[in-house]
Amino acid sequence: MGAVGACVKRPGVMGLLARLTVPVGAAVQMVVLPPGRNEVIEAIGKTIVWTEAAAIIGFILVHFFLVERRRRTVTTAESP
Image (cartoon, rainbow, N blue to C red; front, side, top):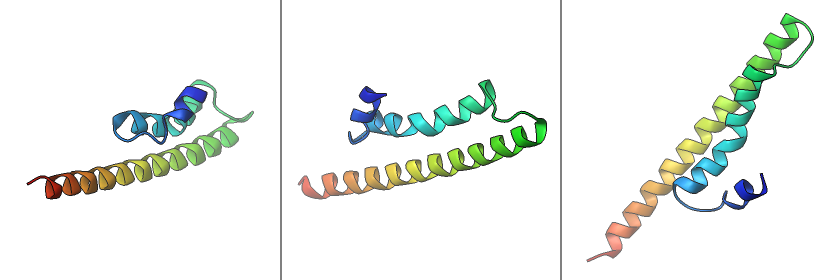
């Protein structure tokens, strides 16, 4: 996890994959090892984690594409 954390600030796809590691890992954990002792608590836990993971993944992707678009615009504006 330390190596992944070190790559979070990198631009490009490598940084994107590093930022997506934790929310994707949380969603996968709900499939492999769900929380709780009964079905109700398990369903509530899965719903909360999957909702938060989806929201965080969406936020990360929107931010990534906005930054990339801005980076491409600046690069094309600077080159004559």
